[in-house]
Amino acid sequence: MRMCTTRFIFLSFMFAATWVGGAYISGTAEIVYLPSKGLLWVQAPVGFALSLVIGGFFFVNPMRSKNYMTVMDPLQEAYGNMMGSLLFIPPLLGEVFWFAAILASLGATMRVILDIGGSLAITLSACTVILYTLLGGLYSVAYTDVIQLVFITLSLLVCIPFALINSATESIYYTATHKHYQDPWIGKIEKQYLGRWLDDFFYLVLGSIPWQTFFQRVLSTASPSQARFISYLSGLGCFLMAIPSVLIGAVAASTDWNQTSYGLPSPLERGESAMILPFVLHYLCPAYISIAGLGAIAAAAMSSADSALLSAGSMFAHNIYRKILRKKVLGYSIQRL
Image (cartoon, rainbow, N blue to C red; front, side, top):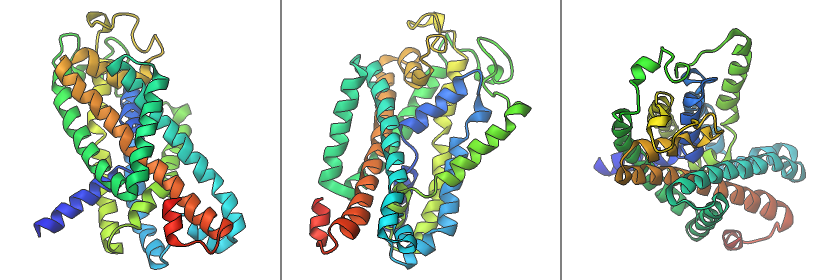
């Protein structure tokens, strides 16, 4: 029983890592911090959570019952291999841009931690991710995802109390509804932007389902029932893991940056709101605490980067190389590719 529970926890973390990465936690904090957005515009936690639940409910059984290997297999089965190869281009571009967003988040964090150039940090991080993903495949992705997500959760939870009690920070309960250093961080949805809000929300919910990063986890579980249950559980986990980022964004919106070593103008006025999460950890927490938090952001970025790399590689190897370029190739050659 204990082994079964441990396995479910392990797989839930692995599924949650589909979307919980550096861009996820940094972007959530940034949206809460921005005066023009605020908490009501933080759609990713709910959107991604619902996508995992809907994906588990509607698509696990069809994918598992027909023994598909990738998310492209149903399309190639319906439209043929050549047309399927053209349809491979959009998900490939999606993975490339997602990978780039993750590495950009990591580069910004490393610039704060180590005071090195963003390009150098991105290059080193990309090389690290590529190396251990090539060496370990899905196993390395799964185990590093679990370790990194545990590290993210614990590190950010440790950092938040120090940021909340910093003398430069006003009570987030007060600034949620009252204008202090900037507009309330709860935010508001004006009537003219309601259509855009709904469009973004449904895009996140429905557009996050047909991704190989999700289905490579679905197809690796022991049974369809297990995959469905873990999809539901990881949806909850994906939502809960956004809470630390929301609190950090609220702290940033409640901070008088002139009382910190960062000084004025504020990150918003300098156009550095994208780095608000590492800034809060670096300037509002003790040095020995901020290092753990900044390391958590780096871990989060790595946990999503390896998944994106593996999913793009598996779609190319199975749907393009095996089905079009070399139809008689052996499985061992595909693994080497």
